[in-house]
Length: 146
Image 1: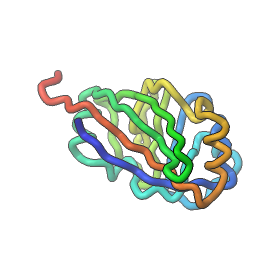
Image 2 (image 1 turned 135 degrees about the vertical axis):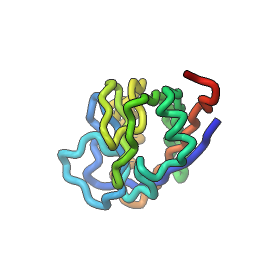
Image 3 (image 1 turned 120 degrees about the vertical axis):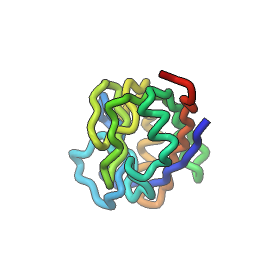
Image 4 (image 1 turned 90 degrees about the vertical axis):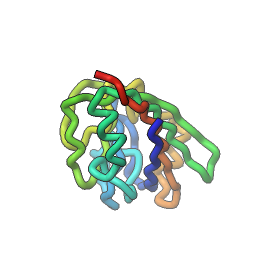
């Protein structure tokens, strides 16, 4: 199991209404149109995740994600998968998708949840810039796969 964590913060424009994606970004400002974003000022982008996680995900590994608001005791769990077509090149964003679409920002595809699936109480707390968000990723170790 490969484990890593990403932290981000809330923003007043977070609506989390997107039906197919969920995103965190290193940007500190977002518009109201950014309905897939659940966190800003992230400490990592997709290009900065551990190399062993990139290798496992390129081999199609499953990843479980636990999203928590540590100051509020709330948690959301989801899962998704990697793909051999992933490049992990984007320097600002991390995107989790319900679809199979892959680009340089994509970390997981065929996820079971998107931004819209997050509980509205959770989302309301994310509208505060002081709210800390943590994403704990547990990626299957794919040694021996193929």
